[in-house]
Length: 144
Image (cartoon, rainbow, N blue to C red; front, side, top):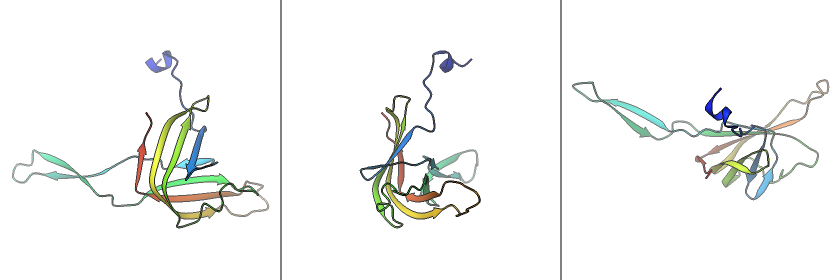
């Protein structure tokens, strides 16, 4: 048994989270593409190629965050979420079992790029789902 398991580690679950856009807490059923990364380029020295250098480079593709939620007849913040709208900050809180935030991800300059919906199918009986795709400048883990 691992050392953490033997000490009774309090694991976070992936279903106890909250998304705050602007100052509004909006319920979502799924958040995808939480990723913190940088792009690098490796350069090999001329002559003797025993040495390499790693350099940071600007992003070559958009950073995308995807959110999903079921559509209710009284949708929360439906007027707030319009394609093209820019939000200075968006927060994702991952809570522990007592609903205390344990991980906080801050998304800077998030713009709603795409809004799509599941197919309407009278035979399936499934929940109507809205998918939102944000492009953003930076995602930072601001947990203390």
